[in-house]
Image (cartoon, rainbow, N blue to C red; front, side):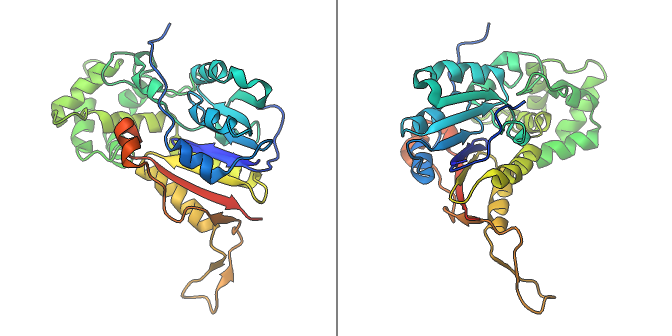
Length: 320
């Protein structure tokens, strides 16, 4: 693989990669603007004829920017609607782009993790707090677990831990307690009924919806986003050849922590512990950090695209 891009995280990779041939009526809402697109292209440095894997293609914005450099793109997404949209959007590039419906954690079958603005605003997918829809939140409609099954079946302690750990919600315990109480009368089946219940506990202050962090936690749990990220990082790094680059854009502090620690641990040549007589070589040393600190959007991009504010881009290069 020549390059890999991964968003929400967004992943890209550039360089030689061993690829296997096979991998295993909505609202008029646009996909989000690609975040840090210029920085991704600069740091991945794709060349004409190189292969870039966009592991969460979404609307195809990053893929388009990379294709314009002359590189070829293999674009993946687990959302069939995203794949259809990107197929139409990138059709003019012909055979230089290949799209597959796949989750990056199954890289050995083809080579996602991510959620776009279009998904978040589409009521029928169950991500929206502003438009009513089924309490679903599956990025891959073939998965069994839904947000409704979590809300209606997890224990109060499990919900508290979920909202606290993945949503970083200060009122996690109070929200979980109310959900367990209200679901005894009527199970939660729609997004607005859940959002209104949360608002009763948290209240509404400013522009941020009070249910934002709980909905984030549910989405991450339904789609096992942190688990997919951890396994995807490991699998994709193993598939890269020397000189290839891996880029990850994370939008959540827990995601960024996983990426930061993974790249740090794989870029240390030597390990040392107090109980050891001398430092030892790191058996997992195979990366070089290209961005010692994360790259973040500038003020101009943040003004034009407020959702980019939390984005952090980290890039590393495979060295062996």
